Image (cartoon, rainbow, N blue to C red):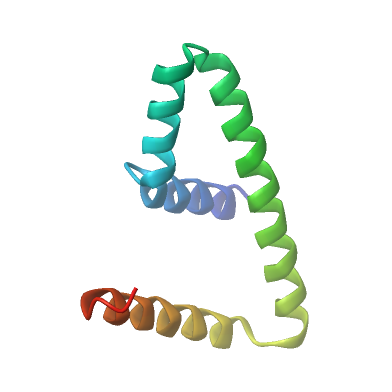
Length: 90
């Protein structure tokens, strides 16, 4: 187990997910349903599946493409989405 990578992943995901729309959905569902444990378990299960899919895709891409290229492509994608949002196209 590489604790440095684990810690970096935890910190990156923790701060990226803080106060995002997923959190707002969880708050709304827990307050409407009155079943916070069920909402929490469903949210955690969904996040595990989504994360597993992204890790498998990332590991597969890393076999064929240099990680630096993946990082730059991701950065350009985020910039492009940000510009489109700024212009009101998304």
